[in-house]
Image 1 (tube, helix red, strand yellow):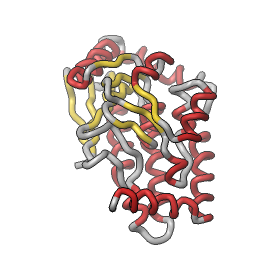
Image 2: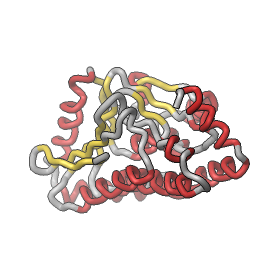
Image 3: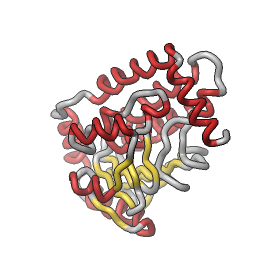
Length: 249
């Protein structure tokens, strides 16, 4: 299983992604993650959700190998729709989602974290969107929820990353802890939320989404249109293959 759902305490659901070697998810994995998050929020016994990962990092985005190995655009469209579903599931989850981030958080990982309600991170966590180097666009919608506008543009155009400590300075990461303490830091936030009246918390989540200045669903789909254009032009395929060749894949 790429995605598993467990419980800690009585009212906290823990969703864990484990897709070695770097948690780059295939099309099915994104939909699996979306289903797990939606199911957790629909369970009235769940008061908070923790989203975490095993392995070397939190998330490395889409599985480029899968896209390159598939003729036509089926895998690309699948990845686009899968990411949209997973990011949307986190945002629309009826209860708060706490993202526990370690190691790399890239591309699709930013989509998940940017739509989460609370972010805690380990000291080794780094965040970025390398899309321009892969011939794609996306997750600027979500990166913009983590950093100020000009820094978002700089990170997007340069494909560089920022540390958890830097994001904590902007207030988008709530806590930065040693890697060995990451899960407990996430549990701590989740327990604080879960102890509240879930009727109030669920109403608060819906209310906060309702006053967001940006419609994250529409904004991200707008970005995805440019990704598809780049694929039609051949730029994306060239960039993905170059990346795989450099990695020796």
